[in-house]
Image (cartoon, rainbow, N blue to C red; front, side, top):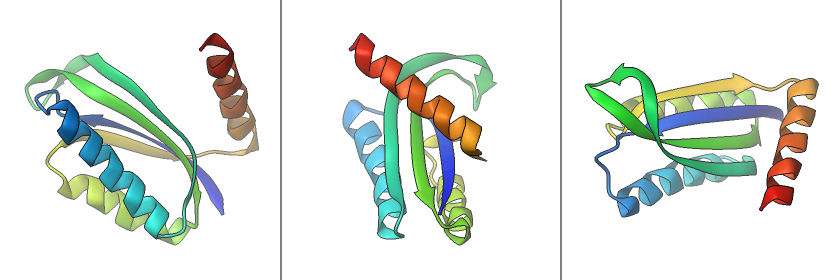
Length: 112
């Protein structure tokens, strides 16, 4: 199984319930295909560096997960089909990025 990280931005006009439903939809999509969710983070409503779809802000979310590579294309296709998603980016993590992400999560736990 490969390690991946996806950051996605949701439309700022969504209600809190709609945001939760959308995040849950994508998490369920991954887990139904055998993915192991390593971490999820809600970064909240943030200002965008430039306008996207005439919006100046969006709800940011991060998923870190392990999954077989053949399931990645259907996952990204699902992002493209969903109107609530403004942007997304999925990257494969090498061993150095995985260890950095673990250290980052530990720091966040200590702050909380």
